[in-house]
Amino acid sequence: MSTAESSTKWVDVQNDGSLDGFARTNNLDPNSLRSLKEGVVILPMNTFFERESSFNLFPKPSKDILLSLREKGLQTTLYEDGREKRNLILKSEDIVLPILLFVGQAALQLGLSILANLISDRLLRRKEKPPAESRVRVQYAQIDQKSTIVRWRRIDGPSKDVARMLMEEAQVLAGQGLTKNARTQSSRKQRKVR
Image (tube, rainbow, N blue to C red; front, side, top):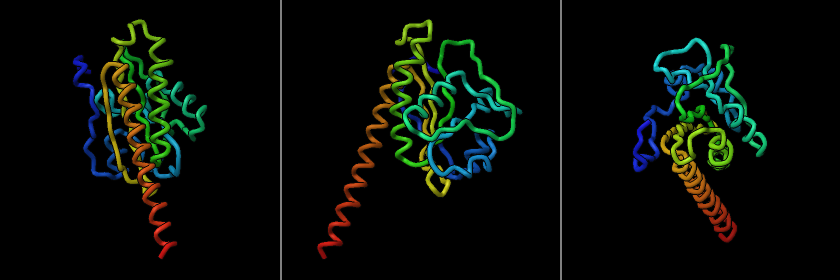
């Protein structure tokens, strides 16, 4: 991760929109992802070392994220494809989070808010470095009901910046959802008037 604070920005990961392509890029089984209908799946970091892994590598905060999302009412599961699960342990003070796969925008909006609070409230308190110096790497993807990747983004940088950017992203998504709902309600009212 780079050290310049000004470089903390979202990066849209280039992809073909297919679940198969997403799975292939992340060394995952696409069939294990196809059955998703709602909620969040916590994915391993199987390509973290830039080679395929014969087991699923979950970063240490995976369990905290799983529990936090479930506590807030999001249906959340840990990815499973039959391979052995192992912890990804890093020697640095950086916090690397698992990839989060969201089904639908409502889960994404709430999930990003929860993640921002988790970074600020829990994960940073456990680190020996002051929070301003800790760095965080976050990656998420969103699929629609047809299993198409509609958004795949990542960010890494100082923890405070990443938490702020996650919260801003959740607020933008909330605004998009409100705008969409307002258009739908408006068009319904226009149909009734005619």
